[in-house]
Structures are given as structure tokens and as C-alpha cells.
Image 1 (cartoon, helix red, strand yellow):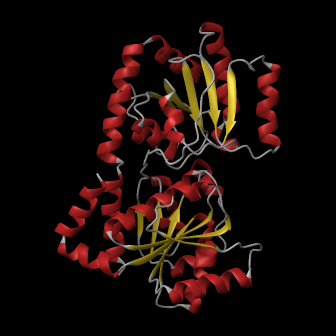
Image 2 (tube, rainbow, N blue to C red):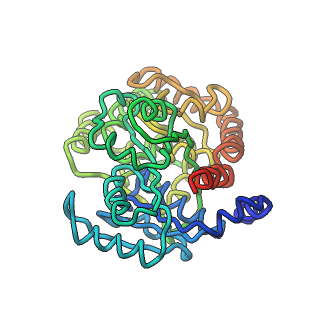
Image 3 (cartoon, rainbow, N blue to C red):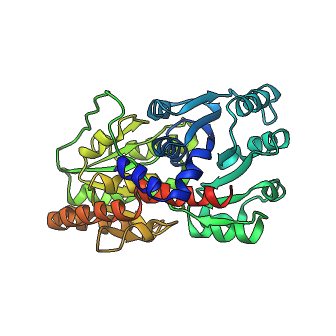
Length: 379
């Protein structure tokens, strides 16, 4: 697949000339496991495969995703400690100048630091990538200082249509593009992960413990699953922030006697190995952009149950490659999970269908060619 990427680019003479001119840094606040963070790494790696001079800069905090950065991607950690950290800003400006970077691709809230860099390096173009997870409540989103800074953006990339519409209405960038996420599912760690429970009877939820992921709704649904199918288990994989929400999840598990059926693993490096041990993938979110986890489920050939938020229903065609249910409705969620549990032939067929859909529409190849076109338009 990656060789195909390079061939496509080289067959387009204009694109290939643009690729050789590009020197791009992905700027992200952390490398802790998350959708925006994973996309920043995947894009940096994909650009390097195309022959672009590719960098990734991390402003605040390193994390497990650092191991996923390809050897041919240059890396800088800024160790930013304050909103306006002069030491970190100077380090980034020096890095941009030293490596002759001509485009900053800023993800999420890193746009502010990227903007400051362009004030000192006016020939450096700035593209902002909006991964806002609460897109169902985007109308309540704060606009300041984003609206003012957006005049400096050459383009905005939005991970779902609602965010793109919001950006066109509220911000001042000349170009706003909806660009769906992509996923890469490869073994990147030698860590051996063994999921508890019975083989062939595991449901996995790949989502950091954040309120918008609505694990409590999923747990409510799983109480019903436990009653009907006591041999099945639920596996929650994602970062535990040790906060009130995480405490609520743990308290719910104890209060409802789910300790032997629901298992928490925290953040795991080797996602591919985890998904290989699951029979069903689920996301119970009350708000999403376009979850990378959903794409990873597809690449792993998992049948899925997802809530109808963000772009989930665009990815999963209901009753063709999975089931889409209303958000915040534990009964519908439980019914959908029960249907998949009781219909193994549907699980197999829909898992294959979702994998094919992801490969055709949400692949690295499709994404990188679209991204190069956007970079070209802004050159």
C-alpha cells in the first residue's frame, strides 16, 4: 500500500514537484493516546513515505505514541509549561528556521503556538486541523481567540461536516475542507497483551476515559448483556485520567457486580493485538468528530455497534457493516450488542464489509493524496 502511495504521487508530475518542495511539521500538544494525536503521527509518517521532508513537534507532553513515529520523521519536543512559554516558542522558531520548514500543520489547540511562530517566520504557511470532539455541541464552542487567529490560516481541515460548517460560518480562513480521518493498524510494540474473558466472547471499547465517550451508557447496556449472555465480557481500553469521571466508572462496575465481566486496561501501545482478541467493537459516545478507533475496528475486521454522532453513521452503513444506534440510549445499545452476539454469521459478514469499506474510503492512500492536493493549493 505504501509503495502505491509513492507511485501515485510520482505519476502526477505537478504533485511530485510539490512534494519535493514541501518541508512540513505536524504540531500537536501531546503524544498520549488519542485521535488527534494519532492522526498527527500518521500524517507525519505518511508524508515521509511520499518523500516529503516531514517533522513532528510536540508542545506539552510526550507519550506512548512517540514509539509510532517513523525513523525518517524528524522530532522535536518543546516541553511547554505555560500558555505563553517564551523558551518553548524560541525553541520552535529556531527549529523551523534551522530546518527551513515552510508549512506548519497545527492540530487542535496547538494553533496558538503555530500562529506565534508565523509572526516571526512570515513565509511559513499555517494550516489548522480541527479535531474538536464535542462537535454535537459545537454551537457552544468559544470563538476567541480562534476567530482572530484564523485570518492567518491558509486552510482549515475539519474531521467532520459539522465542524467544517461551523468553521465556514465563524472563522476567516479562505479555505475550509472536510477531510475524514484514516487509520493504520500495525504492530508497533513487543508488549504482549492478553485480554481476560472467553475467546470469541469479548466486546472491546477503544476510548480514553472521557465523558463524551459515555462509558456509563455502555455499562448500563452491558448490565442487560450480562443477564442474557453471562459468558460475554466487556473490555475498556483507553487512558485513565484518575479523575471524577474515571471514579464514576469504577464505582458503577463495583455497584453493579460487574467486576468479573468488565475489565479496564488503561492506555495500551499495541492496539492491533488487542483488537485481534475481540469479537465486537463498540463506541457509545454522545459526541464525536470521526473516531480513529472506529476505523481501527474496521481494519481489524470487527463488526461494530456505534452511536449516531459525528461521522460514525457515514463510516458504518447501518445493517450493512455494523449497527448504528441513538446516543445516550442504553436499551438500543444493548439490543444492538445482543443482536450481534446472537448472530455470528452477521458478525462475520459485517466485519468483512466494514474492513472493505475502510480500505476503500478511509485508507492512508486516499487521505494522503487529498492532503497533498490541499498543500499544493496553498503553495
